[in-house]
Image (cartoon, rainbow, N blue to C red; front, top):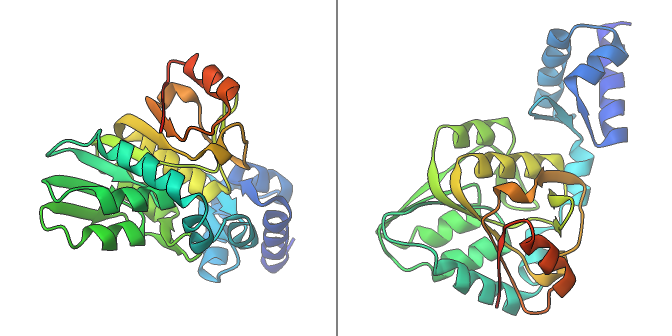
Length: 253
């Protein structure tokens, strides 16, 4: 197989499956994993796919599955404001925290008082919101900009996170299932949230009731890494009871 044919096959496979691992591509294309990694680097530079940890993700998947930020911002606004206000209560002066790129984290950024804090975020909107608060130090991950979520994702953002350690992470996700755990709309978002969880002492999940009981495309983590779930009073009681059984503090507002 010529290199050009292999590149075409790789792009086709990634688009068909949404995401694929280096090891699998190596077997299907009958070349070494190192060759596949070089191929993926080239194809990413040409804008034909996106690199992820251990593989690649379809640009088509990333663009079509993820809900645009403006749409998320206007969904369940009152519930998200209440959840955000409750989450702020867990922040203390001199904390080092993570806020993800969820609309609830942005509502939270609006409500955080101007106190000494270090905030690490992959969200453009969160960073801009906090920039007016002089006592808060804001660190942005950088990385590949996802225009639909106005967030930084990809290997550069994940490597940036790996250089830090924080006290608390406040994040949301697309689905919360008692048995399956947390899930996201695509692999890029799942991987960045896995990295956030990995550097945090405590993890707070902020999610309105529409996400409880749902399972999305890409798994983020099980409940063993989650300390607290903050949701609204419309969430399914049986689902919340099952989550509590996994030693997670559940707060309804």
